[in-house]
Amino acid sequence: MDTNYLVALGANLPSQYGSPRETLCAALERLEQLGFSMVAISRFWSTPAVPAGAGPDFVNACCKMRCNLQPRDVLAQLHVLEEEFGRVREGRWSARVIDVDLIASEERVLPDRDAFLRWQNLPQDAQQREAPSELILPHPRLQDRAFVLIPLAEIAPLWPHPVTGQSVMEMLAALPEAGKSSISPL
Image (tube, rainbow, N blue to C red):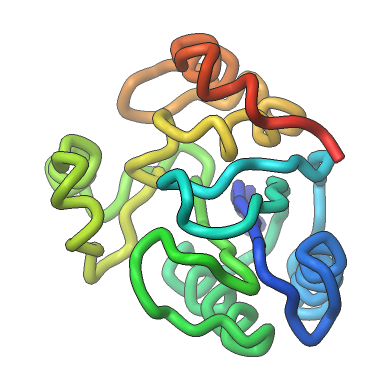
């Protein structure tokens, strides 16, 4: 049975495919070649690097796709794509040629609610040092990231966060305006 997945894409360095925008276009095509069926794709958005000064502005987008794989297998395919596109994992929140994050698998919580809450409530300084060794769904920083929520609102505005119950639009409305105003469509 096919499952819906929400995926965020971003790039702020050129790749073998060209500019960050061209890289995202190539990545979306590659996802289809890997057997993912695209349901919806957001516009591309210009987003400042986080934290400030971490590199050039990003190009960000989100897609909703379907496949019959389990979430861990989807994540493995996303990592293969990143590697094919030249992604080198040098550090958390660094400049990159591509970043493809699995945001959600319908209303699943993985590996369980307690593990999700641990990562969601991790202090900011610990977020820069630690990365989970297992898949955490939904993405534990989702509700904090305008660069994900703005494009996600275009393709899945009513998707409910399975832990908080908030829709994408409600999570986006809860963010400070200052963080949203620097993000613009391309």
